[in-house]
Length: 119
Image (tube, rainbow, N blue to C red; front, side, top):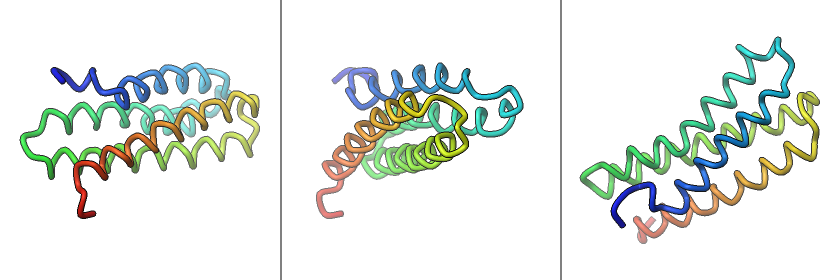
């Protein structure tokens, strides 16, 4: 592997950012500095931390950045559930994004486990 861009988890999380941006465009304008901003920051943090971790020199540092990415995924999950309950966008679209996020989270979890077989 030459680059973090070769990682499927990075590719899928990068695509997730675009989907979340399109979804959050549908949120009410009064949410621009609230949930819209939060949801976008959490999403961007996922591929950003995967990329930064990949460039680190040690497995321990890489794993730490992957854990941060995973934590951002948990933030995004919470924010999507809140957006659904507040009816900020069509429920079906939120669930589609939620399902994409779950795939990324599973991949991150597997990658973290593979880098730290002892836990």
